[in-house]
Image 1: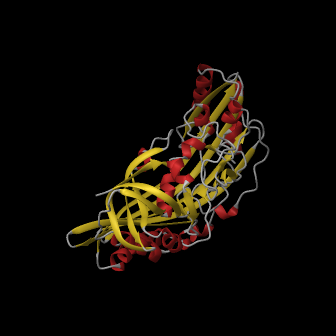
Image 2: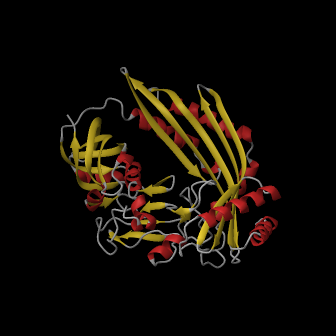
Image 3: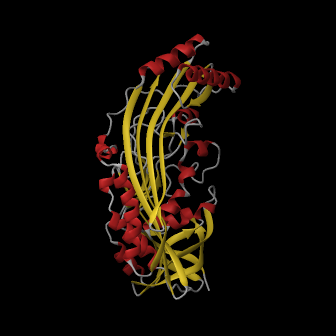
Length: 445
């Protein structure tokens, strides 16, 4: 932790009338390489320092930010934070979090191997990803983009109550968007991978996935309107679960904007549905040892056996609602104050394979993608969106289908879950297996 920097902040706050203070510091190093048209199309390097300062006094909170650590920047930040605090409305919930020293750092969030990988190797990975995708199938005619991104960060905090902590993080991700063509028809497919360092990524797997997802949708047919048993592929389940995120936040509950308000202890999904926020799983992209105000991370059960157990809260909203922080304070960026949010939201897997779920569905659909599920009503959970996928006939996945719509309600759909597959996967900071549901309404031909 930059002790001199914090002492400078504390001294400046004291000289300007006093109050409690909290300084959050992030140093990050980001490298990105894009390949397209059989050449390296773009390179982006950034090395940044971000400072976030909160000051609390007289029941008020002020926030400011900066990108340098010199004395003039510190003075400006303190002056801005105190001005905002004195100009804001008082609220007894405004105060530093009540914490001791955070949990011990989790070394699995960081891979020091990035130091031994040079930029030429990173560029070669992006270019190789494009070539491997093009060679995966003769029907893949071009690659819209093949990208490798690598980030390394050190996060540290300290507050005037004596709490402090620091943690190193690293992650490396790659993705490819392929275009497959046949008979005058074109389809796109996406492949991706995530690891704590470049050696953890498989170029071949990402390329194969991108090519496969593009090729598999060629020759799509229409499906008649009706109500079908359905298997929802893991990536589509993750999209669906994202609709629920605002409803799990204590801030939205308190504001009357959560579809789950007042339902703790009630079954809101099938007994096979278990959802938690798990910042301690290094497989998720937002894993962290402590939250963005220093409270130690822990796994928070949200749905257990389909029953709602609780909501996520930072210190402010915990005080507002009479609860305690769940270690769920997040910062969307350096320029905005922290607030309550998810870390890694995960749906627990089952024991059956995806093919077994399809066999048990009999005649139905395998839904692989929602088109615009973000437009679902975040308060009611109602949705009506486009989708694509495959027909399931006699328990076997057959022809691709597209040009149809699905409608319903997120909670009703989760209440109809009959099985979860074993194919759990992280999609950024939301992870899920495939789910089989009793039925879904389809608007087709």
